[in-house]
Image 1 (cartoon, rainbow, N blue to C red):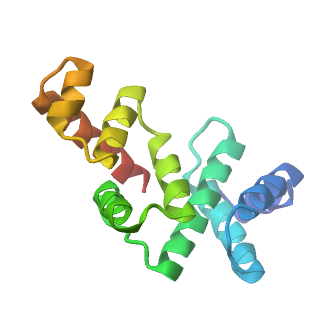
Image 2: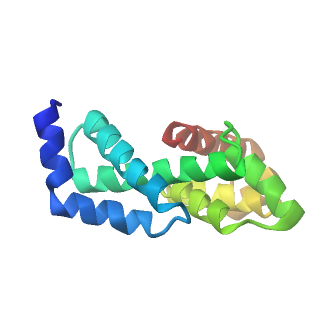
Length: 155
């Protein structure tokens, strides 16, 4: 993508509306949000491979805001994000930022994977979850591992 194409994207009112709509959801300074809008638009334009650009832009802006918040409040950006959220939930409950982050991560999973992850967040064992699905604890562990891998790729 060249600079002319980027300028067209930046001038498109629909893209600006999407960036503003996402920005409203995050407790960041106005200057930070303006910077993140530019970063998100640039990254979205570089990584866009087809489909609706607006959807790609929406997700890009959301991730940029979440990364900025992680840096500000020191939320871990580690591979086992779900495990860290489970530990946080056990200690003091999930914060709004954690809930936003978790909902976004869960959106990339299938229904079954979501249920396994949610079961683990409720401190259920693989065996307990397996009984609900009528499969072995090993199969639930495999589903859990695949779900974590999908979420890692999304980060």
